[in-house]
Length: 184
Length: 184
DNA sequence: CACCGTAGGTTCGTTCATTGAACCTTGAGT
DNA sequence: ACTCAAGGTTCAATGAACGAACCTACGGTG
Image (cartoon, rainbow over all chains, first blue to last red; front, side, top):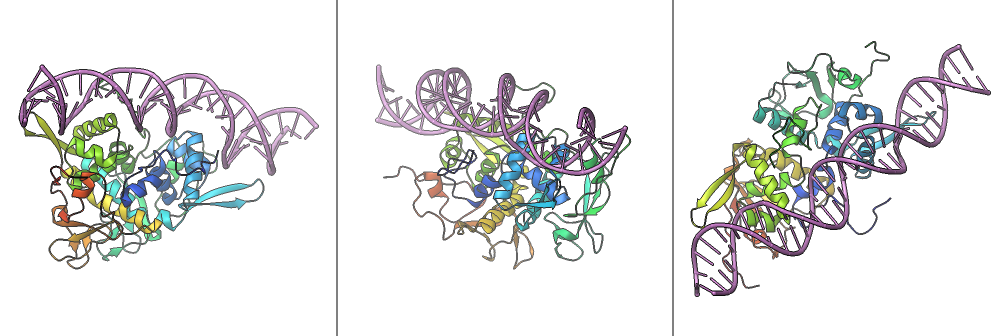
């Protein structure tokens, strides 16, 4: 199944001499940026991505593998028996945060959505600016120091456990905690 | 051909409660961000997008129409006879510049490409920072004041006339000028 | 021991989007 | 009368995404 030959990848923006095109070859496919977003939000397990994104299983498996191969996620054994792996964002994924932040802002500002999440500097509580900087402190906040909490537009009782886990304020990169058994 | 019904669009990240997903519904399809990038670089005409991107005609037509419908490009008559239209980036497209800038930087930094283009503050010549700000002046440079010029990695004699037109230093948004007839 | 549940996949037939080549249209130029 | 350029549309073939079903390894329960 390996597509080892030359460079016949299906996603290539072949002749583009441009680092934007280069970036899109890696993260430009459908679902890919949402997988990375979830990883930064603290999602780590196959099943959690699955239910949170509503992505077809085969596509998720393909994306996780590609992202691992590109060094954007790291597959890591978190228990031996039964063997279970989680996917952890690497520096490369973390370096994408300002891009995701500014893309999200664009989406909300241009299409007048209600605010779904706040991102704050955990040290001072100030909401982040357009590219992830703290307006009060005057520097770009390290991703691990970003506090994520639900905004006024967020659904207060979502169906899937991952969305519920993301409702309580938490730092980015911090793994989510799924409630054990829920009585729905 | 109109897909007026409900919302059965093929690109929807249906259940995602997230402005990143919202943004990707609009600009997340293949080629779309590259079309917008070209528009910011000064490309305006159907044929110029076509040769510069190497995109299939049908896909280009579809993307231009969608982007126009979303208010990201504006279709504008630039001559009456024969009737010819150009596609001009709106504020919505311009607002996407920091995102594109940071995406491009990510691509170059993470994958160690040579620098293909410099973006400078036209007032002071300083190269822009990660999200389009001028490190010397301390503010985000208006897109119209960004000077684009080729970097060391750029092909000095590209095949298509659009790439050649993009070789000479110019401001973003400024329409490109194609050399009339070229003797290749 | 038989059975069920869970995590993390793979397989497969259907549907949908992308591709590239060919064709069409309007008006200008010669 | 022909040819050319710009800006498209149409169409058959290919490739990717979808979703349902299936598979595997292990643990726990009765």
